[in-house]
Image (tube, rainbow, N blue to C red):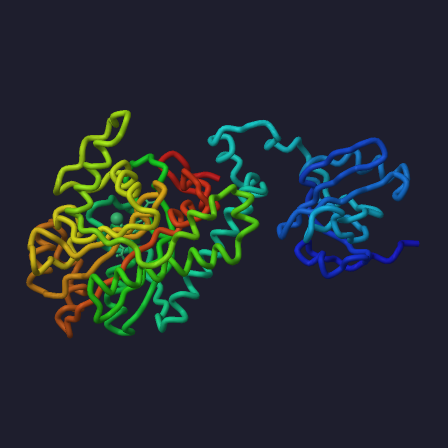
Length: 445
Ligand code: 4AD
Ligand code: MG
């Protein structure tokens, strides 16, 4: 006669069942044995737990069956929940039996030995099961919910932007072209232009979705497909945009620290560095930043190959790292040479060589995480910029309408989710920050 099956419990809920018999459903993560005991580490997606199986308790047949279990076998384990004898808040299962759901058909390819990043990326669909990837994805989840919470509690309306677009938004990056029923269409680089239209309709808006960049850059910070959150605000200026960016970043860091301590520990993240993310962030002009980069560069003991930054040039990754050395929190670089910024940036009324843009550079060498600024609201100035950037005027008729019918000062920014995840988790490469990365040489799995 089948014995009664104890109720199925998830690993994070084990604390509520101490002293009781439960069933876990999951996969075998690891197994050690010592004579008459098996230590089965089982994961169920929510967590990991050690199940101690004594031969004396389960009998020879079950014990031998457990001996044969391979990594990633799916199974149900029954047992009594006990508090870990030494580690507070940790629970174990004293196994009384198990049921194999499916044995792996092949040896699990990801083993304890060191694997190279390409091998792991080829097995991304399996690699996601590992402790470290689990921790990263949970931090990502928390960042996404903190982003939504931030805007949703500040009267922003979510307005989704389209993915197929008829024209470019960011002149500085390249487009993925698709065949849209016989006419070219491009995968969006940014929802910003649509958010500007939406800001005139709703005041404060944001979009949050995938964006695409086709440039052939193979760096630690570039993905071909990444998620961007883009707020846009009516009746604000560059200062207002910087205030918003500062509050936003502090809010996200705060939530990660509150909710993801165990994951940060798993990732060996220096939490003290994250605790320093507090207002106010230093604000330096582009011109000041160029000087700081030159000073920091002069201090380097070993010369770098990167060409020195000249006034008028865009920052490279190396320049961002040099600038960030000066500060223990994000630094906001504002008022850029208009030449290096997109057509929609408002010119600085005090210096027409400059655009009212801002980049937020993360500390510890994590680089640019936010780009944004104040938008040009004057139609004549905008038209001149569209012409100067050799953009097709017809494609921007609707965008010009935003200025024709009640022009208004406005601005916003875009934050790259994956760069934020890399920074919070302390990862040197963005490839691990998104479940299935799309990069120059990677389209699968
Ligand atoms: O600086 P970007 O290009 O700005 C815009 O697209 C503006 N239209 C946003 C706006 O004002 N609404 O991109 C914004 C951010 C960058 O700071 C970076 O964090 C991220 O998007 N980003 C990338 N992340 C991963 N891979 C890439 N290839 C990225 N390109 C930009
Ligand atoms: Mg940028």
